[in-house]
Length: 623
Image (tube, rainbow, N blue to C red; front, side, top):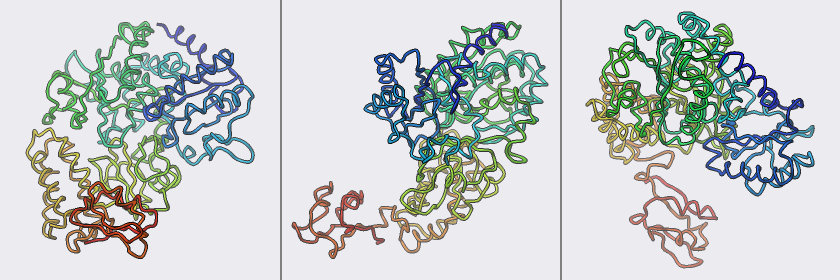
């Protein structure tokens, strides 16, 4: 393919894709119906909803007037499945199969949006409000996610219409040094967790000796609650292929690998389609865009091992060996995959590259803070109204993300903490909610950016239990190669269990802290070194909660089962017998219309009775 052919495709597809904006009337179609095809909405039957739209549109004779598109994630996962209709920009939330016919008849045929099915924040007295004016989207800046929810990820021509592969054409008319200097000057740092300057890593790989070099993409994403990279691959797979090609040209590589977990079937399928299309269009393979530059990419499926998110373990797995980290140095840029110089970045890092090449380093470096440039994508989850995918400029505060974008804490509960960085990160307490989200600010308070998981916790969460949850995950996922991680995290987990069971002493808390620092200082890889972070941060900011478990044998949040009992208030119990009928342990005694009691020796503390009681007669009490 030549640049002329690329531009012809761009011009042909541009009008259709560009009209996916509110009020954009100039279009090949009267309406465009975009159905979310991200994993979250897919699990809510969005594929069947898409098929139902296709059937209804055909039956109503609207095929020439309506363009139906399956896109990637729109971001507001809490309201999925999502359907957006342009040019009105009508945001239909929690769409069901039974809604499709009504939307087609009322909106697509009669031109009247179905108000009762719309995202309520977009409906005003003046009409439908643009999505960018809603709380969830107002403060976002979608760079890495710019095409997600906008294009059909299985149609390369729609990617090309959004300036796709223009950056690659520009790059192969630059020298490798010019490309790398642009990436360095942009200030882009690795979005996989460590935050190393991306351009510096490219420079090291370019300068390494050897004719054979590799470019790899880390799409393993193993943090609990994280789905940033998955969403980019599902909604915009070509951006990763283009970025990897640019990187390969800059460092002198001819072959690349995308290491993606097999648990991401939608992402894998769309990557496979994107690879086939790119090869067909001459954008991967030999003589790309009519030049002497050749580069191709393979997919390697991971089996879900958390440790394979660590760069050396990932490369070991690609080689067909057990995924275990290797000592560094030598670093992968010097000796990586198959003992050859290797460049490795994660999905989100690559997703920024084409825009940096097209718009320049100054444009990108103007976004964010002095040392943390650009935007960051977060998977926002936990005790929050607007769970979903969020992309904000670096330096946005935690308060803005939680209360403005996230919509605050459900049920009027108080914000207690936020976990950033997954099992490798730390917990940020409520008093630090105005912390800016950037690499330096998070590191200063004992947390870390990580890949971008952000879990929100409220007053009902026990911070000791949270630390135990993340450490249990690390223990299970440790590859076992080094003793500090294999044995140290296990001992640390056992000590946390003692705390939650009310069997620990204050001396045990000191021993836990000492063990944390030992694991940090002596583990082989970054995953082991960061494993104690949840424990250290909760000990630092929630020590009184630990002391309550140890000294008072009491769990303030009422979570740790060994330290609570369920009791029935005889003044409130009317003897309806509903709790007894739902108790799987047969621990509740009493006759009909008489107050009941709970036999604590039989109670398994599952909490079902508490949720079933309609008279607030059951409560949790410390022992």
